[in-house]
Image 1 (cartoon, one colour):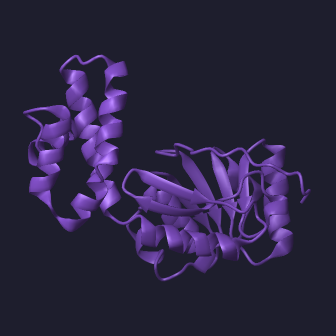
Image 2 (cartoon, rainbow, N blue to C red; image 1 turned 180 degrees about the horizontal axis):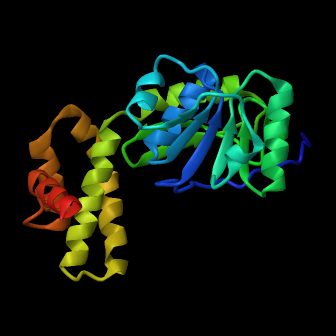
Length: 230
């Protein structure tokens, strides 16, 4: 890999997209689970399958093709991930994907990928991604663990709250340009810390102080839940 190589960071929407994983071992299992967590329709090609994936195949949550990889497995797929320990097979998967102008990732082989997967921390809608551009996956893993310790589940609650506040402000016909100082004020008041501590009266006090009467955590969350299910 060239020292001047640069990746273009992007978040892909793969909901209901058909995605292929080749290899049903430990690495393939993690790739299947990661794709499914983002709403992909996953097909697994492998003569072997892990115990974690077997129930998913049995009840149809993934499609399992119990055989070796074939080039036409790529038909209709949005992306492919090669997760085998066979270097020749991995190169073949990459070559087939290049021929079809497809997105292709070969696990731990950035030189035969046209996209690589960062180390990721997820806290609800918050996604923190760390990449060393393939130079040191071990260092990316170390940074991911540090971020996991720094950003806990309270940040998922915080983003849900901010989304609910935004929806309520828009519903009340506030000018969007007026929102920025309000959100900056909420962020500066350390709402994540208050949520982590369970200090809900203090959360409500911040909301009322910054936004005015009528903004309470429970009410905002109830409204947001109704909006999500309507």
